Structures are given as C-alpha cells and as structure tokens.
Length: 116
Image 1 (cartoon, rainbow, N blue to C red):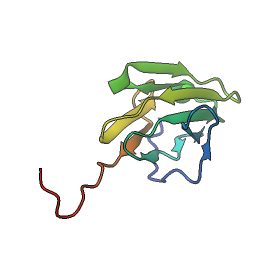
Image 2 (image 1 turned 90 degrees about the vertical axis):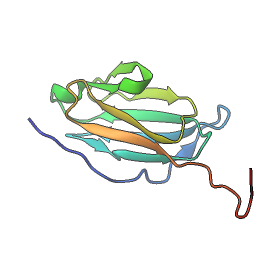
Image 3 (image 1 turned 180 degrees about the vertical axis):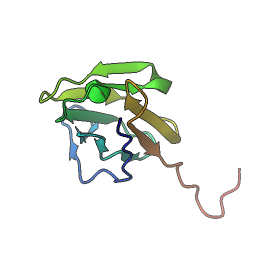
Image 4 (image 1 turned 90 degrees about the horizontal axis):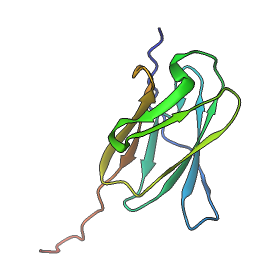
C-alpha cells in the first residue's frame, strides 16, 4: 500500500464560463497532484480529476464531510462541482482513506481597525 500526501498548491487554474466557478485539474497518480487546493471565501470550484494510475485505492474520490463520492475511471476526466465552502479544510480522499487531499478556504480578512 502506498500512502502519498503531497502539499502542492494548485497552479494557475482556468475560470469556467458557467458563472464563475474556477476549474482546477487534479491528476491522480499514486496521490493527488495538487493535494492542497486553496480557495477564497465564497469561491465555487470545479475540480477535474484525471486518474492516470491503475491501483484499486484511487478508483474513487470521496469528500466525507460533503457526503460526495465519485468513481474515477483511468484515463477519463471526472468533474466534481463544489459549492462555496466555509472557511477551513474540506478533505477529500480515496475510497480506502489512504490517499488524501484538501480544499482549504482561508477566512475572509477583516478590515484593520474595524469594530463590531
């Protein structure tokens, strides 16, 4: 079994023409590349998973906190549309929970000197 967790941050990603969701390609090859995807508060994401390996562990991706599971056939892209997520980390993983990644939403900055 291989446990592979990369800490790469998503490189430049394309803006989709469907109302502003940012598309990020995630290559699945003994791990997720990138495994850490940063998003702004309120930003919607379209993750495009492209599985290149044939191992049984990566045959699906699971977002446990969102109740979302998708099959990842080798060589065929699979799109997962995510809503705007709350600040913090939203994990994703293989079906066996060994290969992991996360979407990280930073909290919105507060204006300096502002008071509630």
